[in-house]
Image (cartoon, rainbow, N blue to C red; front, side, top):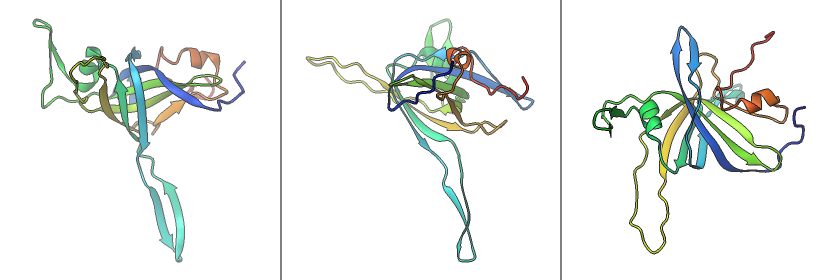
Length: 193
């Protein structure tokens, strides 16, 4: 039976995954999600302003303009697989060297993750993300060693097919949807299916 009690608080970040996708003939096909271990922090800021139309000396019409999100993911280390799949770095299979090129084209992906809750973790997916090159930084070791992390900035916009930006599990999520969240990118079940 689906959980009916709502979380009072959310905390933590875990189970960060990504899934590349292709679009052909108006249909999006997602690859199987791959883990992106070491998630430290994620922050997504909404993009788009409130549209206001003035008439009769008042705000006659207003509506939000949802243009998705701008986000930052702090992660222990960007995996080579993610760098190749999403950022567009190239792997020389003979020498084993990753190369970043100025004309690299980032590839779109879905970003999946979850926040723990006092009742149940809330799983989320941003459907249409594009990442910028990650920040590269390190510092010398001192008497205490602190691990480095990488900061990845990304944009998450609406999908072209149905304008979906983000989905997340709710208190009424079915066990099937919840348990399969990281096996395939969630897609709404068509009516009558």
